[in-house]
Amino acid sequence: MKYRNPVVRGFYPDPSICRSSVTGKYYLVTSSFQYFPGVPVFESEDLVNYKQVGHVLTGPEQVMLEGVRSSGGVFAPTIREHAGRFYMVTNNNSTAENFYVYTDDIYGEWSEPIVVDQEGIDPSLLFDTDEDGTVHCYFISNGVAEDGRGGIMQCEINVTTGEKLSETKCIWQGSGGRYLESPHMYRIGDYYYIMAAEGGTEYGHMITYARGTSVWGPFEDYPHNPVLTNRNKAPFIIQGIGHGDLIEGPDGNWYMVSLGFRQQGEWMAYHSLGRETFLTPAKFGDDGWFTVGDGTTDFEYDIPIDSTQLRRNVESFETTSWDNDWVHLRIPDKSNYVFSPDSVALTGSSVTLEDVASPTFIGIRQKEYNFELSVNVNASIALPRKGERLLDVVKSWSCTGITVYLNENEHYDLAISSNGHAILRLNIGGIKHIEKKINLKDDGEVTLICRGTHDTYTFYVKDAGGKEICLGSGRTKYLSSEVDGGFTGVMLGLFAEGHVTGTFTDFKCTYTEDL
Image 1 (tube, rainbow, N blue to C red):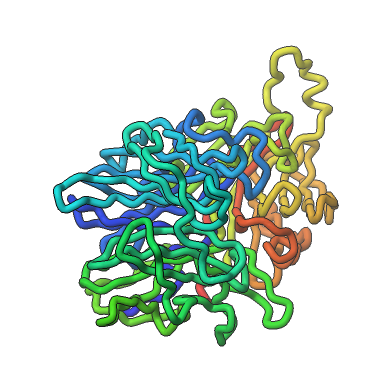
Image 2: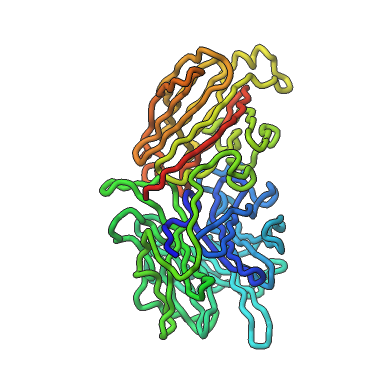
């Protein structure tokens, strides 16, 4: 089987994977930050093709996102299975809490959060069984231990309650790179392997590891660390490889999932799709050390798994799931959303896309640089709310449309206003600029179009006669992590602000894969 990276495309970073001991299928989770529902779950039989089967954090009581800025919220989940039960452990970086939830049905609901009293981020679990059958659960994160040492920390916990059964100890301090993070522990053969990321989740990102004969160490560094990095990789397109998780494949060989990104620009590099999920073959040597690829991750691999890689290059209301593919900014007010299989009606509120709250918004990840998105929208004045006068509602400025969204300060919006205009609004660095505004001749349904390339997003309105009117464009570079910071990627969203309801139909996003 020949496959092409990334295997999960678009803003799906910090992948973690496990295999069900019951069905043999693989389950992968990624970070979700300020988006809700939180922590998407994917299912695979071959490690290459992934189908999203839900989210872990589906209830507002499971995750606190109120007032969480972009790139805050839910960081770096780990998924593990033990005795048929799945556990997802993660960190809400905005509340500084490490917690886990569990389920016996991967397609169903997950438990209420169980908090573990250990600091740090990027938590992980290891289930380990003694020769007498006693099961131990170890909780691992990065931070500062009780003795003041910084590095990868570990304690044993009661997995039923989250209670610590041992003190927190620093077990490994990495290979010397900055930003030691994302620890995972494995017991394979005669060794315990402790793996982590170093260098920062950017161009110096790398994966390192060490091994020992005890879960508490001491650990001997792999002599050729880092085991995987693209920091000096040529060609230059795949960068940022790191934050890995090791898994045995259905063919008996080993593989590693990791995050990475597809950069644009050779000298002034940037990426706007976010950090994505990559797959790289791994191999254990006779000496017990493992290698990953040739030490780097490539676009293509031929592996001994009998399957064919599939892509969904066209997304529509009919081919996507409201519960799986589409997400909200923070916890939504459900009364502002009316879903049907082939349409959605969004009613605005006083919360806008610039606010650190929950605007009326629903979005999907941008999967490729080259795409065309079109959707029909019918804008109407929303009914007055309690205490409001109809005249004030009619006079107010409101809008509904599409947004190419990175965060509350950086997004491009093509919208229909309540006073009969089509507008293109460019928001960069907190500067809000209306690039162009045109009068719409007829009330009723309008087609909004966005065409994306590596360099630009260009926006059009199609009138009743089928004529396209270009309102302008915005550069992809200004919706990138290199310019704006943060850990997320571009979302393609539908939104409504103020006293307007937008009814969206005939949504279609067609991608052209070229990287």
